[in-house]
Image (cartoon, rainbow, N blue to C red; front, side, top):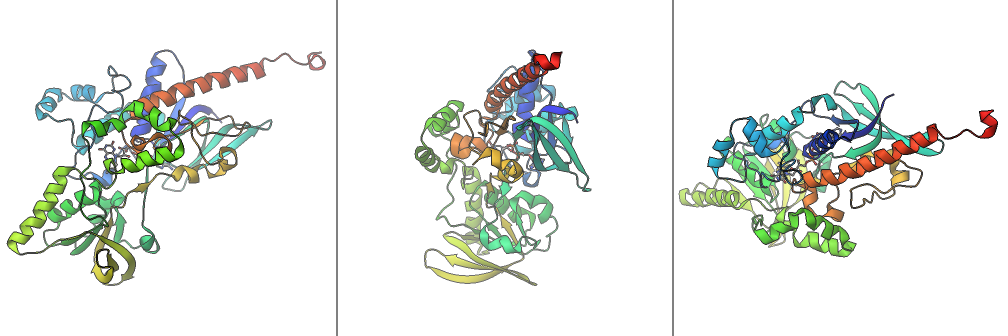
Length: 437
Ligand SMILES: Cc1cc2nc3c(=O)[nH]c(=O)nc-3n(C[C@H](O)[C@H](O)[C@H](O)COP(=O)(O)OP(=O)(O)OC[C@H]3O[C@@H](n4cnc5c(N)ncnc54)[C@H](O)[C@@H]3O)c2cc1C
């Protein structure tokens, strides 16, 4: 079986940026045989949250390449130029393109690597391949929607699989009930729930807010309860000094701190990224609720300081037991549909790399995002988007993507060269005298 220098799992922004970095390094003379595997049938960026008025929450200058190489072919500005929209975009006077446009930019960039990516295959297992007591490379096993299993081999791996929908404990037993779904599948599922009249949205972040507004317009006869533990919806703080935590050199600072200090930093700035919608969106929601007071048609409710204590499925609806945290009282409400805008976890690599766990310990990464391994394990495995606790809040976002892929790319090239030199030494080592005779 052919052995690739690198297989990247997932072909979202993180690995597209890596493909670009490696491609540009290749143009400077280094040869790398890299390949990516993506489970979606084609490129799509959070397709189920591609809502009509959604905008980027980050400057377009933090695209796939600019911070690493502003003269790259793959900058957002060059994409606009190629699409003949650069001047029109300038006239928009914004740093924050629509999510539709950014998705189109990412798809344009991904399209340059169609011969280096297998779409429609999900990696489900990675196995160690041993030679003379050493794990020398990895067997990457995929399955397509028809159940066909395929195997490829790689000397190194980059795992960039994004987040896994976070389902709160009280909903886990009802995961197969189509009336409850995560924001991750919002658009494809809500289209099948046209008759839903009473809908709950659980969450306090950008997705919860966007979905509340979408439901308000999508189903004019619906009644929507927005349920959150917090007392108010707080806006994301993107003021300049706070935004410095997303600068690339802040990653060095976070990584250099002892673990308790890193945790304190993440806690201090948690609201820059989590449970923090854009101010404009918060104002839109406030306006909707205010207009209800004017008309007296109290269609939607803002259930602040509430948490879901229990959820039960009945034929005529999902019954939620809601706990009012102000009064410590509980009451029940039935809903036709429940949207869980409850965020994501970023630990799927632990399952994917499960068979390698004996070599990888507790999956600790170094500054270059490489998982530390035992001495008998040669492959380098890198993580993108799963290192928030060690590298800071920018890790799951686009903020440092371009620069991070340079750090990973350079380390990878060093590993590849070392491993090549090692293989050459083994191949051409002088034979022992007895064998030479
Ligand atoms: C709705 C939404 C809006 C966002 N907006 C912003 C924003 O404006 N600014 C910002 O900085 N961040 C934003 N984010 C954060 C987001 O995580 C990053 O923008 C970005 O998507 C991270 O890229 P990634 O490649 O690491 O992960 P992803 O984009 O999640 O890509 C991972 C890819 O891996 C694939 N995959 C997963 N498992 C497997 C497997 N086993 N085998 C093969 N393929 C697999 C997935 O299908 C996916 O394509 C947003 C997130 C969401 C959910």
